Length: 66
Image (cartoon, rainbow, N blue to C red; front, side, top):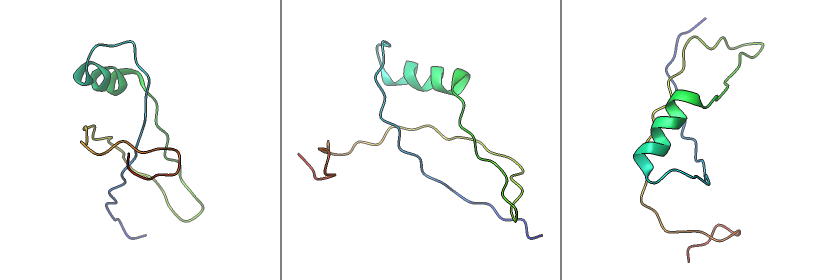
């Protein structure tokens, strides 16, 4: 098997009772579960979710900018 490193970008839109982005990120890092499982041909050795906030335009349900 060849060992490779893949970078995956995950977008998550959340509702929160917390007051600011750092608190939301901290809680997600401590308590959220994101699963990436093995396949027939791939064995997942390690995962680490890198949390950040991107400043981007808001989108409507069609994915177009408002």
